[in-house]
Length: 409
Ligand SMILES: Cc1cc2nc3c(=O)[nH]c(=O)nc-3n(C[C@H](O)[C@H](O)[C@H](O)COP(=O)(O)OP(=O)(O)OC[C@H]3O[C@@H](n4cnc5c(N)ncnc54)[C@H](O)[C@@H]3O)c2cc1C
Image 1 (cartoon, rainbow, N blue to C red):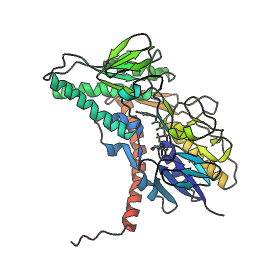
Image 2: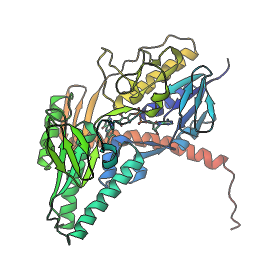
Image 3: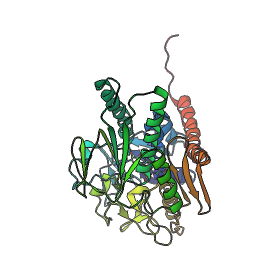
Image 4: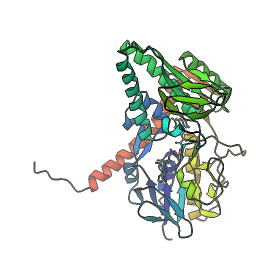
């Protein structure tokens, strides 16, 4: 039987799990295409922005990862712009990549609503590695510029506004509040007039999540001094002012927006059923539209739990769907029956600044505080450690096969 060529677009949580599943079968040639040569660990972005780790801690080298699986796995750095379903080809910047099976895992981006003028121009995000790095840099620059201009004092308040009370908004608000607290303590800073405002559209943060997590997050944010402005939507943003729907406004020195996601721009060129977030509608086997050899996993797809309940876009559902989609591709290659994707939320972990996290696992284990922090850290580090170990094999393979450079010494 001719080896089938499977293309995975996107090496995030879904794409990497799919790659591992497909590679373990040795049934197909796999090509992973990503616009970046790394897998960005978004779930650890809060540590990066709080200066608790470096860039290397939140990235996994996709080139090394692919090399580690041997000759049947290839990495291509390219941005896929459209898909030619008729000719089975994923068009990149300069070339078209032919496939027998296609798995779309290109994730999502921040939902900057075009009906909210000024939002994308005046706010920062953390959804991509460059944005998280520039965020960190620009925040510190603005803070120092203010201190410089006021001779070390912040007689006027320095306001940080965060739009969005979901997982990322809450984690960033808590981490920044904690960072500012430590920054102030460690440096005996005279600039202690820094305020963090979290603007949320609902009554409470983490809308739709377990009451335990909502309670712990609200308590922690309040303890860290974050001011939660609920029942408020951002209607427009100017250089230093954010306008809200209740005719109120707030001045800010630094603004972050995390209010929701829309599927990756690739979906705009794909003519199949989509939801309001531009996510692809998939069937129970994660196939897209009428194309039986095209699958989607992760944030790019509208994922549902087994009982039909909509799933929030999380790394957890991305990983599980990546595995299901890859297993169904293998089943299809071998003419076996495919399995319904039984994705389930096994729990949720919320980092709440410094050594504090709230966790709910399997609906029975609920932990918060330092213990919660360590459990979250061990799970996150475990994910990174295993991938890193796999990458090491890729680097060893490269050092054996790469021609040696003779320097003459
Ligand atoms: C700050 C923050 C904190 C979070 N915390 C948590 C958490 O604690 N727990 C949790 O479960 N979830 C969390 N999430 C959500 C989680 O990170 C996402 O749900 C997850 O990343 C989705 O995985 P994915 O594989 O679908 O997409 P991604 O991980 O976004 O990967 C998509 C990949 O596709 C690539 N790509 C995109 N477009 C193209 C293209 N056209 N061509 C080629 N490549 C392309 C990208 O470069 C990227 O590598 C958090 C998100 C953020 C931003």
